[in-house]
Amino acid sequence: MIEIRPFASLGKANFGWLNANHHFSFGNYMDQSRMNWGRLRVWNDDEIAAGTGFDPHPHRDMEIITYVREGAITHKDNMGNEGRTEAGDVQIMSAGTGVVHAEYNLEPTTTRIFQIWIMPDRRGVKPAWGAKQFPKEKRDASFEVLASGRAQDAGNGALPINVDGAVMAATLKKGQTLVQPLAEGRAAYIVSAKGTVTVNGVAAAARDGIAVREEKDISITATEDAELVMVEVADA
Image (cartoon, rainbow, N blue to C red; front, side, top):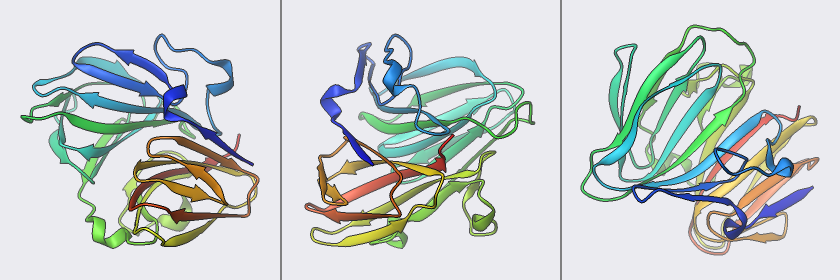
């Protein structure tokens, strides 16, 4: 099963400083058919104006992964963590028992991010934050695991998250194909940050959502140079 969710069909919210596009129900956008995809709960495609951002606010019991597409995001929280994450790199926050954080675009130009929320396997854990650089050349024509709580990814350098799932990224040149297995009982959600692709023969444009389940393999072919982000989680 492959379901394409066109970018134009996503939930929209524009606050001037923030232009948000919601793949799943979030804030004032509610669609009962788009509440989650397996353990994946939120995928926001956000554009944050220069010199603005999210003031301090709380979270708990959620795994929050930020993939920076363009620009950079600067994080600060009540645990004493502070850091700047640039395009192509990733930060994670396990909200656990509770954390208050702020996210700002301190850059001179618009910052564009994917913010992904995954429901944790265990509630009430100690909160944590981390960030890491992931050079894009390491993901040429194959998925690199950026954040994971899967047993098979232990020790591979991915940022740790509190869920049996993974966030991955790949780059494809026009005409290249990669095949990613999908085990029984798992679900995947893919977005091409840049470039058009086909997934098992189904066409998708940049920033469309591609929801996949009950497919043994996921075959992705780039019809333009493409930058892909994929979440793989339990389909429950």
